[in-house]
Length: 207
Image (cartoon, rainbow, N blue to C red; front, side):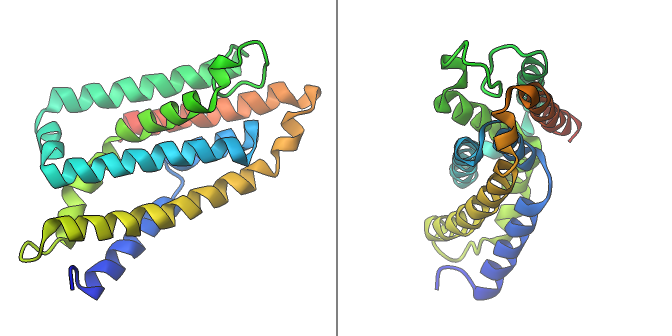
């Protein structure tokens, strides 16, 4: 067996608990679910999980440890990500074209690719996520067994449950998105979504 049943169960439970907690990732999924519907929030989920997959690779190769060992680089990554999220949130609040706004003036700014990239940046610049993969993940790895097989199993055990958890958040938030399609509510919706994304940015900066 590549990894013990006890280690696998504990890791899966830990990952599920972290995914359910209202951190930056959940804030962003809810923001897009409210503003644009659950289908658009799905691209946020895919961006976040792509970031997680990259972290698994970094952890397996030891590159993540080098990032942690460089405080300036670590802080730089964190604050760039936080600033970008605050920028997105402020753009939505001010009604400027952004991946969050409902205006049809700038379709390019609202593309699903932009949404995906925004979510990927959120996850890749979240120091809490990086620390989890560098500090917590190795505790579930048995050095006497093949590392690659264990990493693949843990990656699947992390990404699959988190996909459905974030999808659930997006679907629930999307139930309110029909109000966003009404002109009298669209501005309020954009401000709520913008505030949630700014909150995600602040959480990233404060970690």
